[in-house]
Amino acid sequence: MKAIGLHAVGLLGPGLDDFDSARPVLAGETPLASREVHVPPPGLLPANERRRTTATIRLALKVAEEATEGADRSRLRSVFASSSGDMDIIDRICDALTQPEPVVSPVQFHNSVHNAPAGNWSIATRNPAPATALSGYNASLAAGLLEAVTLQLDEGGDVLLACYDVPSMDSFIHVRPIHHPFAVALRLGPVDGAPWQLQLDLGGPAAADPCHSDNLEALRGSNPAARALPLLERLVRGTPGNVTLEAPLGRSLNIRVGP
Image (tube, rainbow, N blue to C red; front, side, top):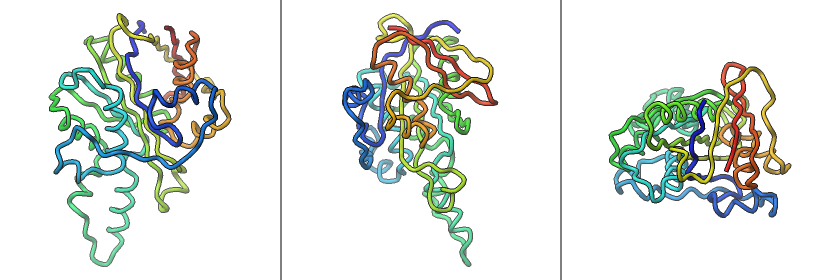
């Protein structure tokens, strides 16, 4: 693929409150201090909508807001990628259906669909542009990145990618062992004016690149969205090079990173 510009990054995870404050950790200058993730309420949503948001929606919108700070959010096309969606809501609905009188909350049902974060982002930004929601299991980051880059190369302009996953509840933890919330957002656009440029190449089976830091590597393996950490390390360290991600269907995605 042709090169594409990466203009801004949003980040939230254990010990990683945002992209700017996480730079010393990603550069290997400061150890990761793992702590509970605090997800702020979405500042762009009206109060009524804000009260109905879930942890997954708040997580996705937090990094989307960070990556689009100063941009025209009303025109951005967007891609929202998550391996498992809102596991908390899914768990509650499944539990409700096992009760003698199964009653599902309308609000929970409303938020259970995979595109709930994308819909809330469109509402928050009053944006009628297309918003895609997708899943590629543990390769959801690569699937979302391919979709977002294809949109930008085909139609131009800026495209937002948000990738996120929340911890699994007790009912699902043995099949989806996700223990920490993590989210990352990338604002992609033309190469001109971008601090970084990316060039994607979809290839055959290949091992994904690990993180430089052992603590970050443990976090990378604990959440599908955290597969972005080796890419973020490369961005912060400022050295051109390649990053390989796991892609769907047993393939790999090679990302050439340049300043």
